Amino acid sequence: MIHIPKWDGHTHTAFCPHGTSAELGRYLDRAVELGFTRYTVSEHSPLPTNWMENAELQSEMAMDATELPAYFTYVAEHKRKYEGRLEVWTGLEIDYLPGKPEYTLELVEQCHREVEDWVISLHFLPGNKGMRCLDYTPQDFEEGLLGYYGSMEKVVDEYYNQIEQAISLAVKLPGSRRLGHVNLIEKFSKSLPPIDPDQQEKRLMALLPKLAEAKVGIDVNTAGLRVPTCGKPYVPVWFINRCLEMGIPIVFGSDAHRPEHVGEGWSYYEDAINGSPAN
Image (cartoon, rainbow, N blue to C red; front, side, top):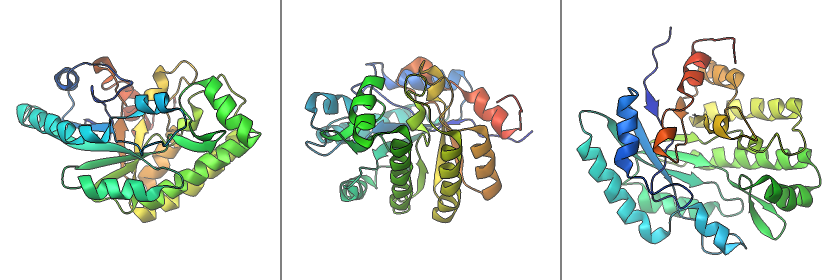
């Protein structure tokens, strides 16, 4: 059996407008209780002003830029408080923003002295009336993306095209960096037209050499298990195994937005690495 460091590398806090007001200590206590030894706090980073036409929805996506100093102070306080019990890393989940990579790079330059661990994710695609959040609701996906591209096949291709661009940007991030929830496009798969598995496998296979060359890791994100319209992790077992074969770093991520989410799906990650045929 392969020894796996017990690290939850993708988690959130009360600074997330679509999370809960639970104190970070409750998340960290849960991690200690479950036997985790490392924990990355990776809050959603601020978005550009007027990034989405729907300003109200945008305000729910991430913290405001003015909150960044307080966020870093908050994590640093807990890092000190849990020293010796849990290794707490200061992280950010930053967005690859189609057509606006310079915003992300400017944010990295602003924050790089504070951040030890980066998760770079794709949550937005160009669509009807500008940028659309691809993981908001099935109805919004259908209206804003399917209605714009005309077919699921075209949406999927655009999604992975942008994921490839995200990898190219991630190369420029200092320190520990990995690609967030690579198959987030599947979040509403039970409520939308099916994704062609052959198309998806082909696009995922094409990412592997890019990740290996860029030395960018993968967030083995299990949040899809608790999403009724998905019901499975956002990284398949075969992809995890190929990453291991190619030396691409992998880190478990619960994507916890509530304390009770911490560590959810760890058994999937552990079984995948140790060759369980069940998944």
